[in-house]
Amino acid sequence: MNPLISIITVTYNAEPTIERTLQSVEQQTYPHIEHIIIDGCSTDHTLSHVQRYVERNGEKSHLIRVVREPDNGLYDAMNKGIQQATGDYLVFLNAGDKLHEPTTIEQIVDKMKWKNDRARSTSFRGSLGWSRNYAVVYGETDWVDDKGNFLRHRRLQAPEKLTSKSFLQGMLVCHQSFYVRTDIAKRTPYNLAYRYSADYDWCIRIMQRAEKRRLRFLNTGLILTDYLSEGLTTKNHRRSLVERLRLMAHHYGWPSALAAHLWFVVRAVIKR
Image (tube, rainbow, N blue to C red; front, top):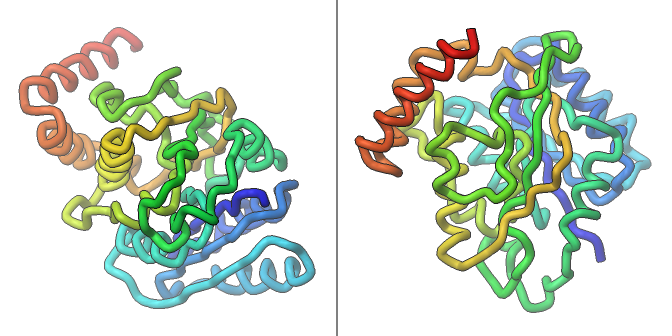
């Protein structure tokens, strides 16, 4: 039995970009996909695109679940997506983002050498069972513009060996290229106290929880995601940096956080 991959897409008035994301999932060669769409009551034609997507895929093997209800912002909607997920792994692919290739999920599953231990594990019910499969599977990211055109490779590169301390150097793995075992994710919701950088905090806490159980992380060595560069954090860059400094201090201590941000400034000047 192959693993089920839950892809969670959060939308609100995403009409200009949602179709690219839907087509990206639709074109995947890997059949065992659950696509969860959490819409915060869009007032444009986002759901018209979603409905056509559902109709197109009526005879295909991947599952589609649509939830339309008000939420308290992006990260609240992501928490709803986590609770809806029934797959073995989950990943977030928001409107405008796309999987890098039609074979991306197939390649990921091939790399992870997944072992079907559901008979002994209750991972899909949100409890940390016996499973020793990788806690996190990750890779690289390309940036694209609002039309899906390639802009550049992401400046921060995924480390060969990822640990919870790696993110002291910044968010080295893009959130959309960070696949998490669903049992771990269900026990680690986003902290809604953070407005811009809750994904950064979430990834660190996911890794910390996994490390306590001595679970492994897998670098696929692949480009996994084409990421739309104008996301919430990108549009509020300065505020997100301040929030990230607070998060770094919380996880790593103020001396390390301040030293890291000083290096970020120096690095930015050098690269000019």
